[in-house]
Image 1 (cartoon, rainbow, N blue to C red):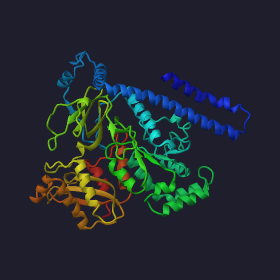
Image 2 (tube, rainbow, N blue to C red):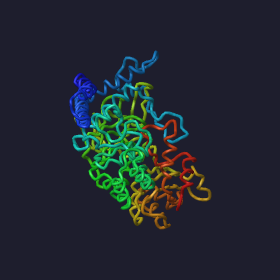
Image 3 (tube, rainbow, N blue to C red):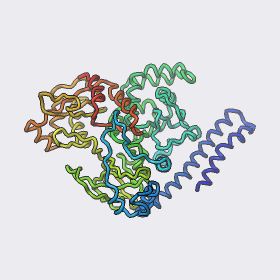
Length: 531
């Protein structure tokens, strides 16, 4: 299967020399050449994607055998002179000799430990390439027009594709320059192209920052387009940009690019809120697609269904070795036996456990998934929450999903408000519970509301009590104080994300924490409070 792909790529490289010798005008030759390169490039990707799809079909139809091979790969790569598992691939022996290890909750700057056992370049290359090729094929099937030359632009230095293919960027007709690092230059290139059909960004939170920056610097960007800095002057396009920006954030993307169909970002922890904010305001009316779900820097789920309104992911049976740990509500600390992919039950929630061959650590990621269906013998899941993002000042253990739902209910009762971002801090981190009961400090960024009244702040505490009987009981007895809500200014969360990305232990793509456990990060937001 690889031979036809290589031949197509060779044709892609050699055709320019042959075409340039033909007796045509220079513009006609270049236009025909670009069209031919585009067709050949997509042909090569189609062959490669079909091969990956065939491999996936075989593995998911024989998931037990595939997981046995993945386990054997892990054990062979980690064989040591006194390794108790040497020569054995029995899953029970594997579980008995290797206890479960929790991932660190510290996903912020200041922690030097690895969030995952280091994975090999071979694993990363294979899994990332598979996610990229299958994602491109699925996107093309759902939105055929996005593959037209010049119809796609990425507005962030990072790509939503786990394994970007910059060597094919020009041939695929991407409007943005592959490998460009300046976010402003990338956005400017996209703004110069009114015919875009797909808008790409590394993550939804990064795209949210792009649109907030566009609103702040819109006039400067329009002037750059008008004067041709860089590129030829486009005064008419600049006038269109100014008119689109004057009408506000709602539906801005479609006013800037009337043919736009889909937004492509890479899904990871803490992105749901940004997707909701983009969908309600700037990207209203557009489809969202993520080719994969990543956790702690690795691909753990494949998205083969762009038409689904909410991300559903297939847990693949290859390396690394995946186990599922049943989640018991209110008893996550209890030790329970794991199950394999073929044993997953629909409707159940599980924590992901990954084992890689480098360190042979059965690592509990903290990411909780719910099984919603099956693809052959492999589970299809949706991601629910991250256990490491729970709040607990008196043992109440309010999960990330429970708190987000309660906050969403409260914000819907704040007239005109749209939630852009939030994080929580337990009061002990900021030493703010002196003379009062321990409580939550909640920092929010909103659109449509400049000040928070005491009545609005109280609504979050009421919603939390409705969502958690344990929290309600602790509030009744005064063991926990009311949640305190602070409104931060625009750009506060962008500064927080910059601080998180600067951490040496930060995974890619960066996961957005919802609970801060380091004082200096909480103080960063505290200094940006406006109400």
